[in-house]
Structures are given as structure tokens and as C-alpha cells.
Length: 167
Image: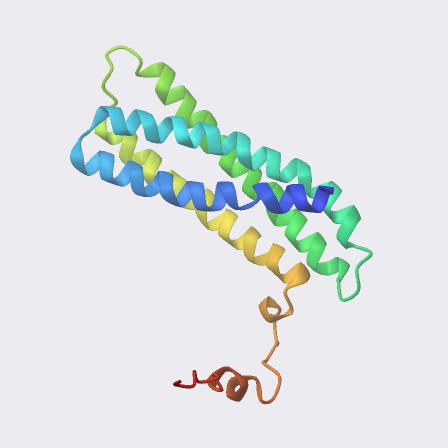
């Protein structure tokens, strides 16, 4: 396993995890479940650490892929800049979540206003992580790059599915 493999292994965790945490926090808020709100906040803290880990594995991945054909350094740099902002935003969300867990440890209820505020705040890192992932996809996936179009005949090739012959 090289650094690029490691980066690819962990980079989906904060993106997908944050979407799951947002859905869990929304459900917990609607159900007024303190236990689920706490679980959501714990997940947000974990995802903050995961986002930092993803960012830190990026440099090693860059060293591997920058020498590959069809890799444009501009795509790497754009992804790297967006990743820093996304990691900081996700880290800040994790800090606020951790502060909420600590602040509302007694009584064991977390005010609904705090949960709603956190839910709204979590949309910012979610959008930033999604954009960062999109930019990362452009590094190796030509179909994600601006101006790309499918090669001529690609649609017809998809429609030609071999039929199974009856005995």
C-alpha cells in the first residue's frame, strides 16, 4: 500500500460520515432524543479527526500521483487548497461538538437550540468536503473535468448488451 492508497482509503470517511451525522442529528432533533444528539456530536468529533487524517495523507498521495500521465498539477493544487479549508471547517465543527458534549454533560440533556445550531453549522463543512472531493476526483477522472465529453459512440456501446441465448 502506498500513500495514494492510504489517502483513497480514508478520504470518503469524512464526506459520507458527515452526511450520515447530519441525518442522524436531524432525526435526533426531531425525535428530541438526547442520546441520539450525543451520538451525533460524538460522530462529529470523530469525523473532525478523520478529516485531519485525510488532509495529512494528501501530501504523500500527491507525491505518488503527480508523476502519472494525464495528471495536471493545477487539479492537485486546487484540491489541496480546498482540502485545507474543508479540514479546518470540519475540525472547527468537531471542536464545537466536543464543547457541547462537555458543556451539557450535566444535566445530560442538550438543548434543542444547540442541536439545531449545530445542524445548520454542519452544512458548511459538508458542502466544503463535497466540493473538495469533487476537485479530488478531477485529478484522475477525466470525466469529472470541465469540458469533458464522452467519446463518439460511447452511448451506443452502452446500449449494446449481449443477449443470453436460449438452449
